[in-house]
Image 1 (cartoon, rainbow, N blue to C red):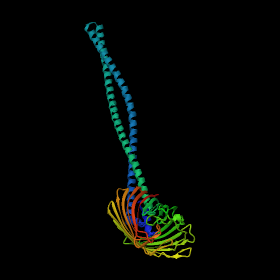
Image 2 (cartoon, helix red, strand yellow; image 1 turned 60 degrees about the vertical axis):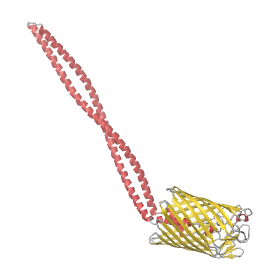
Image 3 (spheres, rainbow, N blue to C red; image 1 turned 90 degrees about the horizontal axis):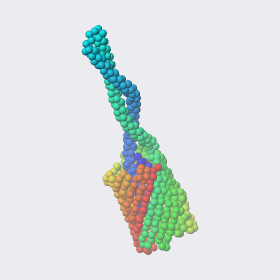
Image 4 (cartoon, one colour; image 1 turned 135 degrees about the vertical axis):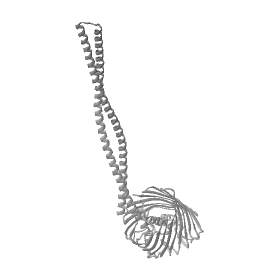
Length: 581
């Protein structure tokens, strides 16, 4: 769900073609954006259905996890109650066991006393019997002797009876002691069972509480995820994003050399059907050619962009407004103008102009569902004047307003996408304060872009863009018709979930003559070839880094100064950091 902002921005960009001169760099400025937006749109073709399905699955998952969390809580509470109950039983058991063991100790003392008492009684009875028998053996025949013997036997019998009573009491005490011992053993067994049961219940309770904690975390996550999806459904495309890049263009050849460092900044905000963005660049441009040295350090103009969308079942209507704020450096000295190197060697040849206001509208018709889009759009630029030099009088330019019209067809399958466009730009007459005027004429563009998913981990891009301008004006330099062909390819390999490898090849072929600000001359049949390798690294769902290195070679035919053909070559180092807040 994290690609909603990309889809939103790309869809806006794709509906409002760039008015930047396509010949400013070897690769058309937004060819990769068009390709990526087509891919994103193909992914979003079934977005609503997949989103509803994901929302339903998130709701069911939330309900299931909450149900399992409730069951875990019930189990934990039940175990806690059972454990507390067993702890209470164990406490009562231990208290009763303590009393019984105290009784047992008393009975053991009593048994010892009875045993001694019985032994003493039997000893006394035996002694009495022995005495009676001894008297009887003396054979005393008188009456007194007989009475003594009878009394001795009677006494011995009484002692035996007492001994037997003591034995009976001892046996009763032993029986009671055995009963108490049995009770003690039962209580000990019950205690052991309770202790074992409590230990198991405590382990189960620990696991249950861990499960409750886990389910609580899952429940909070699933609830937050469901609420986020629900918020996206009610208010889609809400995001804040930005990027910063560091691009270095270095070239040399035929005794000439130069470099340009460009640091673009972008900040954008998308909320449901509204979008606004801000973009500007810092440029350090230096021409190192002897006799033509020049350097400029400046910010470019700032572009503010606003768009709002009216989205219906079959139609999409975008209302757009672009504002160029002159924060750059338009007025250049002679030394600084030398830093305006050739437009096919560096990114910027102009660093500022006047206030521009460009309102636009685009109407998109869905054809046969979401796979095909037909777009008709137009924009009109009200262009303000500016002074291109700081050391020349009466050269302030009042550029003519521009009117752009375009027609686009986009087809998006899951595994391949195609975008075809026709654009036409016409300009009003431009005037210079010295009284001269010029007409830029009309520009026709044809753009064909094709994406193909080769495999689960490979993508392939092809493009062919054609740019045709009747005449081109750079300050007061006129050049007759000079059609330009751009074509190239990009192969992308997904190395992992976070890393992609890209290999690129781009070709520019300019037919006819073409003005070169580098040599202040007209050149014939310019050709440029660029090869590059790049890597995309996704740090996390909100951060991404891109890095590219490119090598190019460019060939110019003879120029209007009579110079022979020239060759240039160089490297471009491009890095980008994207962040979504």
